[in-house]
Length: 136
Image 1: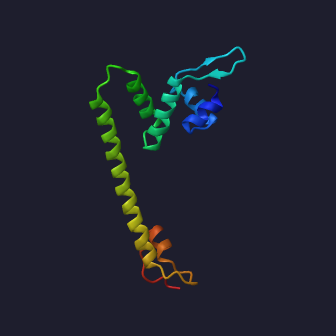
Image 2: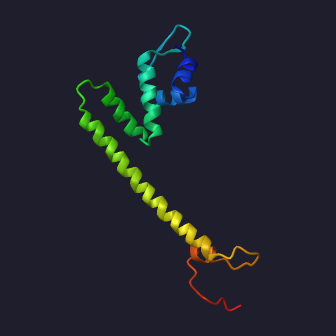
Image 3: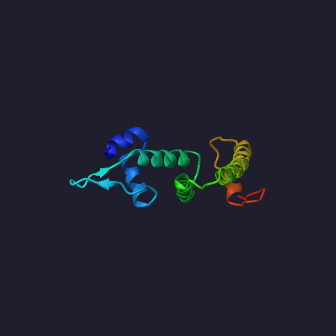
């Protein structure tokens, strides 16, 4: 298969496929006499694993580790499960942080009259202003 065929089958762009190859995440494909890469089913599996791992939030390094596990017939599913649950915990922590940010932004927006005046409690709060009277 050529790179455009692989791109269509995996849902990745040719650029992404080359990127994964450059980063050493993809088993190097053989090259024909014309210099073009030749991909196999093994490459499709690796690229699909990479795409789907990235979609659920694994970093490139974590994807590299997942590929090593993919290629290891002696792997233990417990290790894969532990990595997956660790990623879930990271995502849950990020969601909590995002919810706190959302709540703060909503509180800031609620404090602002949103009118034509220059006084803006949002700017004052973000800038650390804490005076009640501006003495103008």
